[in-house]
Image 1 (cartoon, helix red, strand yellow):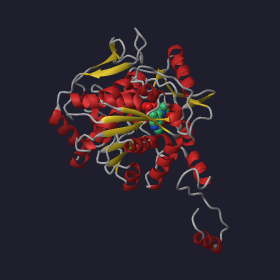
Image 2: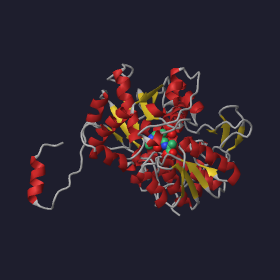
Image 3: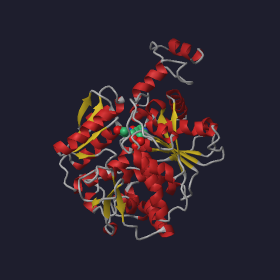
Length: 447
Ligand code: F0G
């Protein structure tokens, strides 16, 4: 089985699980994803890394350059993976033969003038997580969750999903040789994602209900049927997702941007980003934190509503949005995400489906492409620039969470519908197989 390896010097520090609500601690090698005492969500706490500050930076930078210096083959995950490179802050005591890595991460940080212009901020960079092996950021969390599943001897893994988590779990379970069960809302998952989970061999259940129903059902099954849960409730998932931020900081030469914008659904990523920034500051990798901008779709924006009450109230909604990945009405990681927003002086916004689709077509037309939910981050940046909160001279990183091919259905609908719905509709044109027909198309003005 193709697994990555982590050198023995990684196995220095232990980790514990700690309840985010009541503080009860538990063995990090246990299979629980919730607190035994209060059912709160657990967090992984690692012993501080042996190296700090510039020394730790140098170690991480070294790994980045390691392949060119004749590292023996096969290269270890600590070199090839953009997750395990940061192992001290992810899962320090994972043993060599435990790591299940594709590898993942190593995603580009892109500057596209057309997108920056549209958003109204010159120094806008796009961290494109669609470049992960299954086309979304979920792979960063899944390599850690499935590594943990294997080391605790889990016999089957499961998740509820709007499509990307299930695609990722299916792939990593196949790699680890574990059976996978995925629950997705019937009729509510983008085509590319559903196809992936079938292809990678997960048992795929189309649940007559929405994502929130799927999550409730799989959580009940976790206890009754002994499945190991790989949703972002799982604290090890978030450890892996922290590396989106760590890798971005490293790509920026450890210079801290002013803002990091991220689409928000179940709020796992928002929470992981807050944890990553706290860990990076504690380890002396950075000396201040950027402001987080979490962006929801208007029809699925309970967290944005809560933010408007200064988090005094928590809301649940029946979610509806064209961005199916974030069609979530009762986000599981609410509490952890509140802390992330508070710790970073962050902002939570809701943008309309029309804003999301416009952002998406600008990103697509720049040759970058992303799935609809991903474009929420850029739409959110544009809105905050218009509101005068983000200044045009700020340095902003917007995370694109998924690949353009994840949702081919909406792309075809948008472009076939022609002008009107999106500014640059590009409908396909069917012609007879002769040169005259081709010439007539080229002579006609573009729709
Ligand atoms: N963007 C994409 C492409 C996603 O798939 C998701 C979540 C998010 C953003 C939101 O991230 O939940 O951490 O706030 N997708 C989950 C799934 C729910 O099942 O694939 P979040």
